[in-house]
Length: 288
Image 1 (cartoon, rainbow, N blue to C red):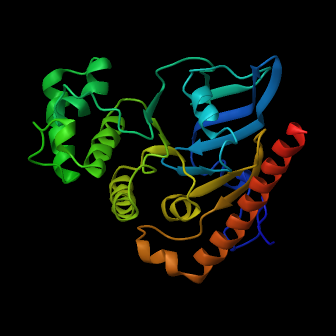
Image 2 (cartoon, rainbow, N blue to C red):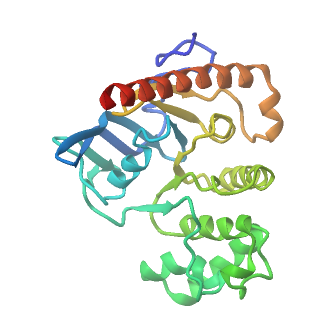
């Protein structure tokens, strides 16, 4: 295995120290740990996780199923507090345990069925107190860019799964929070629609450059979309490696045929399979 968590020239692998200082840090997760109690037993989920997202950076998190990726998002979003002295910083401000500081796009679109497409998109702006006329005008412009022009008055049940996910993404994109947290937003889509959505997200993000933290189980998706990929170990999750994606932007799906892309995908897949195996073996030992 040649994957490493430290700088190694041009092979696409780097540590976070090289990236720091290029752009101001929007998000800093500092030594975050989390455990839960179940049946009188303490179950550790996160173990000293530290990561950053710089201004305008797209960072993906990949880890074994059940390693604690969603728990990490709950901590970042203020839905839970880390154990001990772990901290969440946004632009240097401590927001540990505080809600309302990030834009969140979940696995399912979570649209309100009684609101039209336009009304769903402007919801976050309404909550933030942005004038209605201004919010609706901006939302209408972005719906047209997203290929949803003409569907402003449609209700969620009238839209396909991919269209619903676009609406949910635009709702997050137009929210006033600087950081977008995307929790496997394409996981429920079929393979063809997922591929279309990946390219759509690439095109849209490269025009907007919001700071993004993206959870995915797909290594190929992470390499296609991201500036950096953070690999988490099995539970309790810790940062295993950080990979700087070496491919220039703008990107297209054809990059997945590049030999370097295939090499990185293969090595990352082997690492994740190893972590999954450790988790299964650990569960087996606990059951004895």
